[in-house]
Amino acid sequence: MPATPELKARAAAAVEAARAEIVDLSARIHANPEPAFEEQRAAAWVAEAIARHGYAVELPAGRLATAVRGRLAGGKGVKGPRIGILAEYDALPGLGHGCGHNTMAASGVGAAIALAALRDAFAGEVVFLGTPAEERGSGKQFMLDDGLFDGLDAALLFHPGDRDMVGSILLASEDVDVTFTGRAAHAAGEPWEGKNALDAVVLLLQAVGLWRQQLPQHARVHGIVVEGGTAANIIPDRATARFMIRSTDQAYFEAMRERFRALVAGAAMMADVAGEVVFSGGSTTMKDNPVLAGLWTANMEAAGRDDEGVDPEHIGSSDMGNVSLVLPTIHPTLAICDHGVPWHSIESRDAAATPRADETTLLAATLVAQTALDLLVDPSLVVDAWRAFRGEA
Image 1 (tube, rainbow, N blue to C red):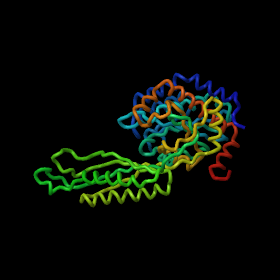
Image 2: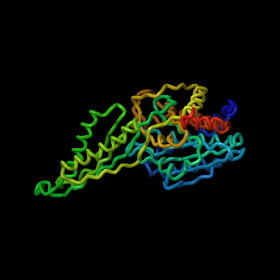
Image 3: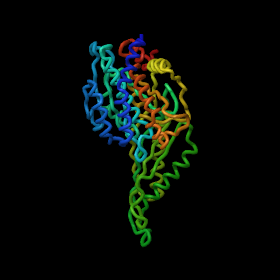
Image 4: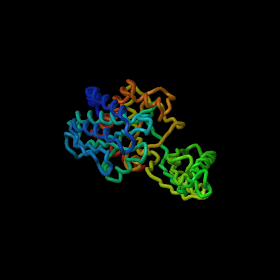
């Protein structure tokens, strides 16, 4: 059976007792945004917070300088489930925490604090993972490759949004860096001597725009110009752009990669320059675990919140999908703002620092802790989750 109502009430009380610490952490991370792979302050603050509550902490954990792992054994021994409590804390360049990762970091820490307060109630181990670079670079895949998820029985991570959703639909996604190399020349004196790398970027953007007309609803491609030259009177000999390709259909996503390569080659040929494409940071589609989702739903409903269902018109990507293909995982959403607030915007950034966001952060910490307790006190639920993961249930 899942954890008792009394034990879950103690988890909620433990989160409330740490309210000031959790809310302060969220506010500090929000006020000090750091982009992917550069989250030095956030990682240090997260590590310090869980260390104060008894976790054995590694920073860095694995190859990433801003990855954190904290481990806490249950008071009834380590022979039992190993439950992963995740946190994100990278920000968007130039925008800050428009994806609300400050709330994700603080809620993960809050859940870890609550579980530390209740460690005498369970056997097994709580493994806190601070995961960098979700917005670009797929830091969780590095951590998977480094073995930091090895032996875990479940991975739990909340995401803020404009509605309450238990399920998660994710687009497979990949970062694409494009570099065109031509030849510099005086733009007025000898333009015919130049080979304009910026022309190739312009052609590529036009090609992508035309390609979009034939893309199905489940696919996306979008990008920006990163470098387009140094002076108006110099034919640019180097130009760079960054794109993302996405799809909820993993097989179609693979075909998109090859089509993009062809577009780059075509743009390079037309501009008579060299083109290079580098794909990195791949995120996969999501494999929600129905057993974990059921536990979360019960805890959420007990807290007075209802599942509004997934909004298929507003979906993004996350390297949480990569985790979900390796072990039982959920990535539910709780609202920090009203319906219709666009994500990755000034509005969503500001919403992540409101009293409403703070209350949602505390609720998320409670629900993550309660769902973890369900698994820790009843290992048969872990067995069920793995059976569902393997398609046996």
